Amino acid sequence: MDIMYEKDNKERVPFEHYQAEYEKADPQEISVRTGFPYVEEEKAFRVKFLGVEYFAGFPEFIVRPVKESDEYLPLVSMNAAKILVIRFLIEGCMATGTGKFLTYREVPWGETYYRQFNGRCMMRLAYSYGNRLDAFRAAMEKLGAKPIAAGDAGYEVELFDGFPIRFQLWSGDEEFPPSSQILFGDNFAAAFHAEDLVVACDVIIGTMKQL
Image (cartoon, rainbow, N blue to C red; front, side, top):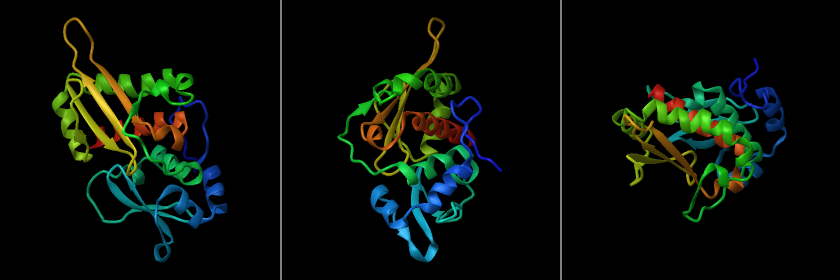
């Protein structure tokens, strides 16, 4: 069965394509490049994704949590999350940030995909939670995000260890609609493609709703 990005994504790329590329890779090279340990006895990489540790199998990309949990597990349940992670294993790299944050427009090719990002991520976040700040805070805390002083409510969540994303909300009123901003640690620019960041935020917001 093909696993694809959302229907409105520019490219619909079947999971089988990435699986074939993944099988050709060297697990030790992937481990050095991404910083994810390769556990020989498990035949899998140990990947921490949105605060939960998983084993990502190699050469067949089958994912399971390191510890069984009753919580919603996006990397098990969400096709987009699986594609995001296998793409990172194939193409991505560990990169150290400087502590600065970038808007989506400041990421290479961000201007090209901005309309998609704005609709699928920032507007979705604003209209889902802009007038429900308590629900936003509760979902972010379940993700293990840390509160930040930004907007009417703000949190920082790590996609992978060392890759922080900031979600900021301003509630609406009679005059102005709710609004949001999403910022990325500056190391994202070296490690991900711009279109992957759309999917990353889509996955996080989808996980918040499931939680």
